[in-house]
Amino acid sequence: YGYFAAYFIASMCMLFAVVSFVCVRGRYRTSPLQRTSAMADVCKRISQEIQQGNRWARLAALGAALAGSAIACSVASALLQHELSHGHVLIFSMAAFALASVGALMIVISCESPDWVSEIDLPGVSLSAADTRGFLKLLPVIITAQMAFGAIYNCMQYSFQQQACQMDLRIPGSGESQFAGSFFMIGDCLGITIATPIAVGWFNPLLESRLGNYFSHEGKFLFGMIVGGLSVVLAAYLELLRRSMPVMDRISNCAPDGVHMSELSAVWMFLPFLLCGVGEIYTNPVIMHLAYSSSSAATRTLAVVATLLVQALGTAIFGVQITALSQFMPNDLNDGHIEYGYYMSLGIALFFYVSFVRSMRIFRP
Image (tube, rainbow, N blue to C red; front, side, top):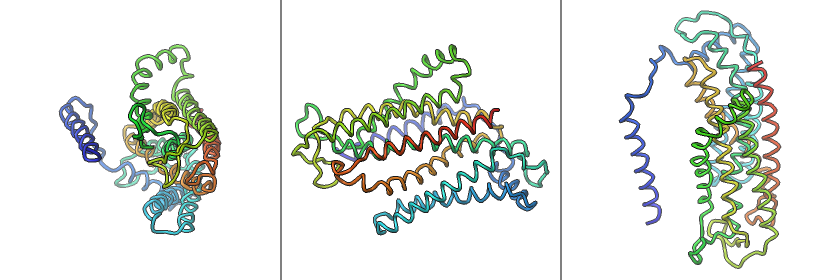
């Protein structure tokens, strides 16, 4: 049945989810719409400070502009990679990396203590200065947290699958049929669906009762980072083990043309995917909850949207990492060292996690 059956089943599941949402919509707690856009009000207040000559407001605005440009460069590089030369793709990747790094740094520096937002009543602006300061002060926490786990998550999105494609992909008991590299993403989904009810119903309450505030947002995020980091360490170990195994005479169906599989079973890659899924439930939802619960009613939606936008900055940084390490990640991984990318990602994750801890201490002194 192939792709038609796969997409049809997925479409039916999405349709069922939409119908279920509509049927119980009356039970949801809703809030009245704001008179003006929270994003527009934040921009107007920053614009007012810029007109007053405030250098911190200028730094925040410039950082946001650079971050947006980084996302645009990253998208352009992905869309045009087959039409541009390697040199042009590298230029786009380097530009996205530089813009994302500098833009994020500017936002973090300018928004850690946003006392520069003055108590001026602006016509047509319903968002108070206090709410604006609260949102801006949350941005360094969101940026550093998403960058920290993003370094690990991007390994799963790209490198894990590439590595699995050079392992023994034969489906047990099916002869010569092979898994696709993306099939192992199911491990990530299973990690989320299996671990979530266990975490919410038993594990989290147990640790919260014993550790108290030590297992609040910061504690959960640290736990997620540790589990996610272990997934990358395990993937690096499996790669070293795979490369030490004999190369089979069978060609992989999902690796580049002509690349042979190694004798190590690809089923082992379920473990790194599974661990990364467990790490996800203790990082992304935790940061979203932190952003939502720490914001005023007027900026909650804006804060959650910001957490999603920042993920794109992590993608821009990871793109240049792949380009920079391309000599160690050739089509045939037996001629390279994909584990170097894992080590670099762990270093980036550690750097941003330390930055996250610093931002949290400023946010909650």
